[in-house]
Length: 290
Length: 279
Image (cartoon, rainbow over all chains, first blue to last red; front, side):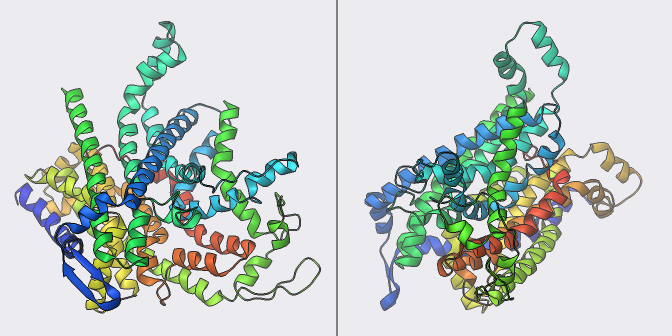
């Protein structure tokens, strides 16, 4: 049997099922985004692009977009920082290293909703963090983690806690293949620690860092359950991101068409970003391979 | 270096420690400000109350039960059934897909690989309404089967992506030798390549299990309030109904235990996962 025939034999059945299940909902929601729907009187009416126009002009959607962008930047930057630092640390030799490597995966296995639950109890006025400081200094005023100014950063830290282990372990794996001689050479050449990181370490971990960045950006832009558990989008609309706005429009206000239109805005943003990353990474890889 | 190691350990364990500690404390210790930092009189009372079993407080008084025992147990069992089914089906479908994408040469290879990845761009919220209409038409509304089908659309792309890298990493000579020995393409695939990629397949099974066990959004919209509600929405429901932090902590621990144990047991294999390879 020719190789390509065998390949199609393996690929086509699975992809057909996948497409069959995915295609209908996707087309349906695109159709839905061109409808004005009022479920209370079962009113369905084709209104073309008006949902998209309305979403574009809606200050609430604009606010939610700003929240999504701000949140995504926080999580991406924090997660990459934690992942790189954690990986560099795990790559050192010290007592207890094996234990840390083995347990690093734990936060990731608990998922974002669990991170929301855990950090909710850490952040409360009488939660662990505030209680810990009050036990040391009883005059301390509890930090309001879930307040207008801090809420996004607080949730981003929780999200970072959950997502960073993945990057940490990928980067750690990449670090382990760097020949130690390279570091020795760099040292005898008189390179500083920063210079060694930039010229020896970084070329090896650049690709895993970039791919981790793609993953995290996508996850952060789609954040919902962690916000649901930690703040419900509040206080006010301080942590109301696009996905939460879609949820509110669709399942609270029953504006099905409008919710669908906003979600296609979000899908477009995520696809553009991941395609950009994808092209960037594969082009770089090709030039490196040459 | 030890400062860094200490910080990393604190970062990983403090959130988990606190929930675990809370679950062994009495509410009176938890709700004061500042709260006790560790259980002064460790107790299983919260777990007992969760399952409507008799439990006694600090001064020997009988503590009220939570009254959610049936729902918690049901959520846990549903999560288990859904996660195990999703894991088995995902592996059955994604392993051949990943082998073809990672190993065989054919014209649409990179296009298909990219489209598999792109399905991950969808926020679940975007396809929830169509899915719920679809399920109500075919009579699967609020069933575990509906959840299993939806979760497969999440896990298959995810797992295929990771496994493609694993298959791509197996030395070409292994496959060539098998072919020279006269094995057919099918035999080469399931007798040689699947065992060689074993650790990767195991890691992917764990990833699928964890993803299915923890999924929240689809389950919240499609099964909340029904008899097939999985654990995460059960927990969110309790959050809004039960103002009892210590009991909530105990309930959360029950839900977090399976993925955490599975991840720890298989962490060696998960660590070998390399998402970079397929590109």
